[in-house]
Length: 428
Image (cartoon, rainbow, N blue to C red; front, side, top):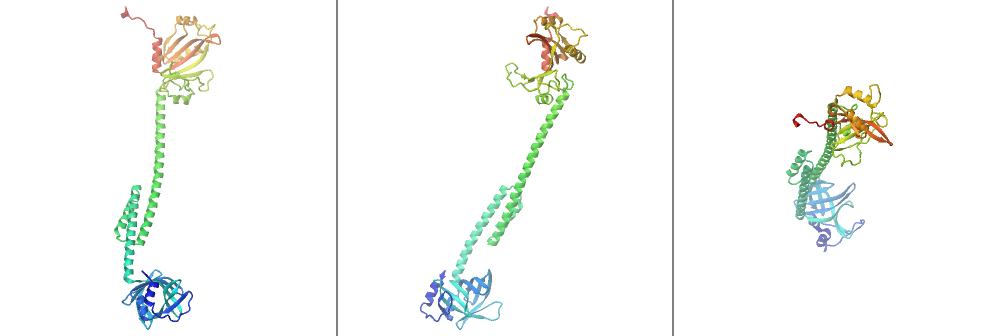
């Protein structure tokens, strides 16, 4: 690339400087003759600006040696023919009929050497750079190669980005991404316009894919929440079914109303606050522990207590019925006409359950003589146990009644406890 300053110094250094046309900021302005005009423009590309009324802006003019020219102005290309006659530059575009002629000048401006086209005393073209057509063509080719390689690199990066999108978004818009990748790969030399189009489409695809992924996350989270809720509901249904089946299975089992041995801790608490005693009784009751005494069903004259197994199943339900009337702590042989809590319960249980065992007069005597602490009355193979206890309350001996409802293992132990070991005929 060569500057006008150098070119014109070489060409016109020995020429005389003629009269100048008054012009702001320009000095040493000189009109060129025919040979100088041809030497300046023939086979060269000139870059400058247009200043012709409303038509203003950068301009590039290429003057081919075959008499044709090409002008690039306002992003448009104009073509025509040129010639030099009588020290004037004449040209007409391909659609024109007649030539129009103007004068060429050179001069100094802003410490640089410029070429001007002046018509009717006005500058209409001003050129600051001149380069040979062959050199310009080579530079343009190099520029195009650089641009082509840059665009190819952009295309490669774009396809790489699109492929990464396919990995990240494994389901959505796969066909659209593949189509765009194939389209990019199918163009050998993509233009800037092509790349802008591809970038816009890739950007829109990524936005759509991101939105789809966000939507899928929301749907997945909702599905997960629904699955968790359904699983939780299923657990509750199963628990309810187990509770229902358990209660149905215990429907005919002895107990107080629907509070019966065999119920799970949670089931019991729905009926009565028989809470576990938090004190450690593991050394005394290795298979479970007693509950604290509680009030159930709003009843005031009976105190309830339980004993849970290690699996938190109610093994024993105990009803503290209170003291039985006695004289000096003596269990009396009650007549049928008497009335007290023991006789009332005895009558109810004798009618409702099968009696398995009852204390004897001898045992009652031993209880009264403090030889025994308690005596029993047993129903339904040990499932129901009357426990009559001799206890000291406030310094006085009292006879107390407890009713126990036992689970099958407990009932078995009760029967073993009250069944006497007797000699058989074979023992003799």
